[in-house]
Length: 304
Image (tube, rainbow, N blue to C red):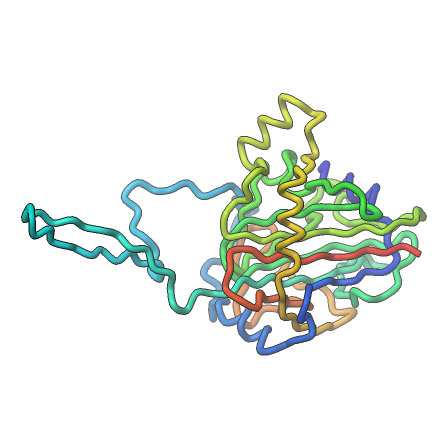
């Protein structure tokens, strides 16, 4: 798994800081707003070991438009010709959902279990962690990494993971790295002795970002030109990410340090099953302050 190998080499942290942008301390019903779209009960039970499909959904022929995003057809009569002209006006739903991202940090304990841990604790050489992400609506997840404020690198989507897809379904959790890695070293981000300041950028978008390859385009790029992978965003793309990072977010944290990851959480992420209202909640939840199409936040890993 190229993604986790790259991170194992570079993520040499001793403290982890969440940057939720301006107004991060405003916790105005953030948790309730995020969890309200979780179903009361699971819609399906994992019975196989099938992996979730993270490829961009293909439109279905004859598919009707989703409820909540109606097109209003307005007929207007031309009195000169007697003909009728129909115009379609797209309307955004009045109760459009604000984008939300949930994050939980797990640490490997002495017995090998994944337990919830406080992101602000000081880590030591040999500690291992894993991040569990959850979104409140369908969309596309991008993860970038910078070292000591250096050049950004796109580490997700990755040609060697999820068939280069990055599409997440609402409340279906996503692990990075995956607990199903073929080797123990691929299942965790390991802290080593090298000093440095690593920053992960999480970009959650309702639509794919312009200028960045995903799915078959990313697979072809990495197959034909290995020097092009991992992908480095252009200056224009990165400037937009930085701009979006300035958009205010509201956050709420609820830590339960030492609590082991549940079987439900692990199965949901590995088999593409959505979490229900009674399932464990993310430790940190970030919600956009306004209705928009993107949410950008960062995760800082600092080694002193």
